[in-house]
Image 1 (spheres, rainbow, N blue to C red):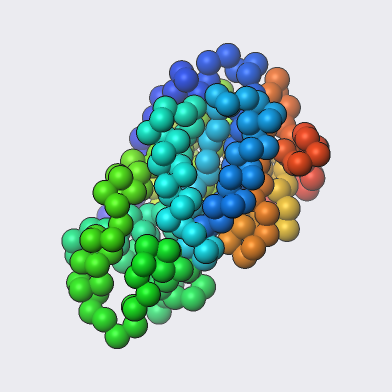
Image 2 (tube, rainbow, N blue to C red):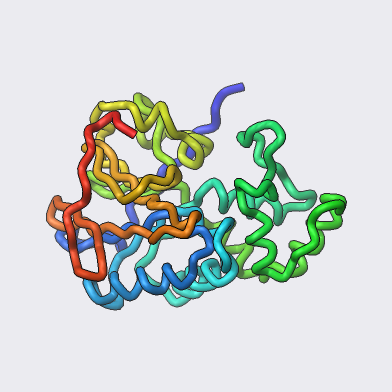
Amino acid sequence: MPVARAHVPPVAPEICGDLMQPIYAVGDIHGQNTMLEDTLALIEKDGGTNAAIVFLGDYVDRGPDSRAVVETLAQGMQAGRNWVCLKGNHDRMFEWYLETPPRHDPYMLVGMHWFSPKIGGAQTLAAYGITEIEGRRLFELGGEILAKVPPHHAAFLRGLQLCHHIEGLFFVHAGIRPGVPLGQQSETDMLWIREVFHTDTRDHGALVVHGHTPVDHATHYGNRINLDSGAGYGRPISAAVFENGQVWQLTPQGRQPLPQAAAGST
């Protein structure tokens, strides 16, 4: 069966505008709404209330308040904030459990599912008031999920983009498959890919800005930047700012150089 390729949407003018203006990217959030609010405050201090922000996905699971994270982002989008929200693999898991019947992600390892402790879906459902999972039939649980997840949260999840391409920058949750044109990447690769992308040293035609794979701190690898600094495990959310062809990590002390590592390293 041929691999379905995702259409890369055109560059949104409200995000691009003058490329001399700063563009911010925020790594994986994983239910950490207090950290998200702190990160948004840092961005507003640096770039103002209309700062252009690309969120790299994985808003839910593991952390204590996925519901609040989704509400924060959904409200911002509804208010017309200058934001692009990308889809992460955890967000798709949640989205697929809002279908009738609920759908399991076939890319997961055999024996794993959204409620596995390593994945963290149980923490997401707890934030929506669903605490009894074990021993229930999936169709029954699916009905409760549909009843307790607000419709505008479901709409937010279904409306998430897979990627965002600005001249010289390609924002995506997990990464890309090297050698495949950016406009022909598959949804599964953009949500799940790891090693074959991380170890590739080639120029991908744009600097790829991604999350998905936790690292000790946000890192610039030459042909890619990883902003997943482990919020799903209680470590801080990372944010970067791109301006005039340069990139910095945004910290409480202001803009700081991003740690560097060799292309192809992990």
